[in-house]
Length: 156
Image (cartoon, rainbow, N blue to C red):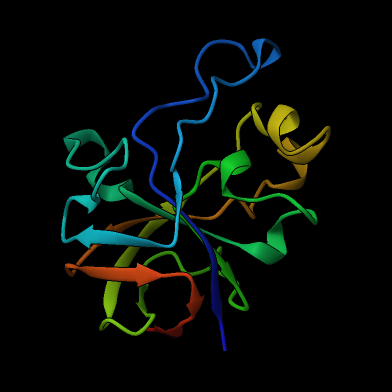
């Protein structure tokens, strides 16, 4: 069974400027045990919530298997770290996640391409290593809650 390993809802951008300058400090509480998802808007409290330019990419999901050991959401700035399900080839599908509070459907729109920051936050060579495995950008189709722990996942 797939597992939601980490959840991130960050109110601020941390990767601004030059990667060589390093990321801005993480705000307290950006890694959480659950997130509230709103249809068409994203994750409540996240920096992309309700932003028209990001509606097709307001929830991002990455597979833990794509990351080197020890790397997590604080390093890659995705919202959902999912173990046990390869997500990068789901473009055009609907991914449904149910962690116990009811299903949350996510329309998978496009790949979330890695950037040069990955060499700083994940480690040297990560930018190239994550090409094609940087996760997915989704539009939420339902209101709901996602929690860390086992998750029933279906793809349609």
